[in-house]
Length: 245
Ligand code: NAD
Image (cartoon, rainbow, N blue to C red; front, side, top):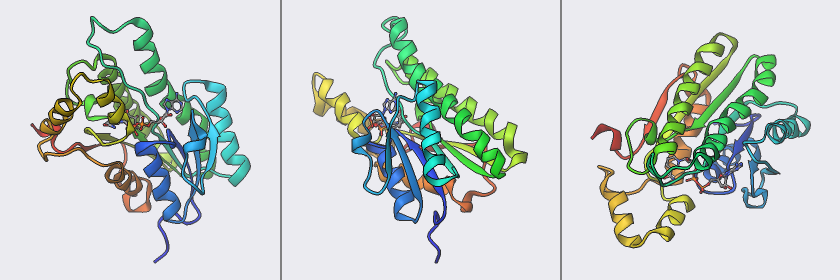
């Protein structure tokens, strides 16, 4: 069987860690080429071209896509995955925190899409997969800016899907529940009682465990592949059942 991503070129942001690292790994393992953008390009998977990028900076995001075109002459897949969190409610959230979260989680998705689309439209095909969160669908305590930012990612995903569907572009997002990535490790490090905090994260997911970055990467790979050729504009929950509760 031909590997699903043979001949395909993917740009993945936030690819030095966690979910993005696994997404990049999937594309590489299944025959694709990957340009992996991150604040820390040294951490991207072996075999990917690592590019230092802050996804909130328009010039740096344009340069990331330009590096992909310079190296491979095309971009077939874009995964806007880089994201940051914050642990505050509305009253505790400063304007600076709100803007920091939105500049990465929302502006970063817009900038990546804006940079990649002209190349995809010229080629007549392209696939975009954004990493949103179950936080877009349920109100999580102490995640005011984060929930709002991921809601914006879902809405933007739908708009892009509808706008460009007739020009060969598909755009979907994935919405994980709590996934055992370094992100959660940092969250637990900051907690007063890490074991109790971890137990609470597990307990809120009906399947009774955290997800794995690999499980999310499997879904992203499906959406980026031709198997999902009739799928666009959708928010794909992969949350252990949180949103169903
Ligand atoms: P992670 O912290 O392990 O990895 C995030 C990566 O993004 C890091 O390598 C970091 O350097 C990079 N990054 C952060 N800001 C950046 C910026 N401005 N420019 C470029 N790169 C930047 O986190 P993760 O768990 O793999 O999260 C990846 C995505 O999944 C995020 O969008 C996050 O919101 C989303 N998500 C995570 C979970 C979870 O429980 N881990 C749940 C739902 C959604």
